[in-house]
Length: 142
Figure (cartoon, helix red, strand yellow):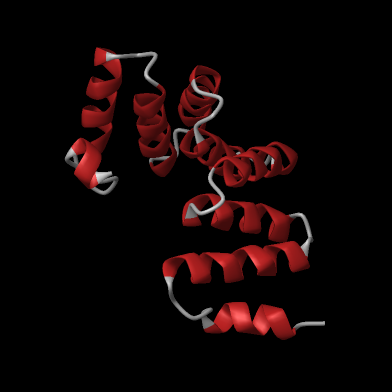
């Protein structure tokens, strides 16, 4: 985010900057994703959800929009919706660690441990790192 927009989610003025960017181009899916992410980190669930939904509507082929919507839906308690959008994001960008990770999280939450483990292992592979110890413990669980 920092490279693209010049600030990160933890910047004190992140909310103001994201909203200013969105005001310049209110239908831009990338700016809507940015606004959704910033709003979500600040607990503004309704605003985050609205922005993420508009981002997906504006660009159905954006994995970033789908994974952002999945994250917001999960935060709002809509597991089925989160799973559907996480799966779509990973389908669109199968080598995007964030999309694959979010699909794994939604699978884990839904009780599909095997799919979750496979996604978490795939993320480690994509990042070129060994699976972390907590992933290895999941793999050995009955």
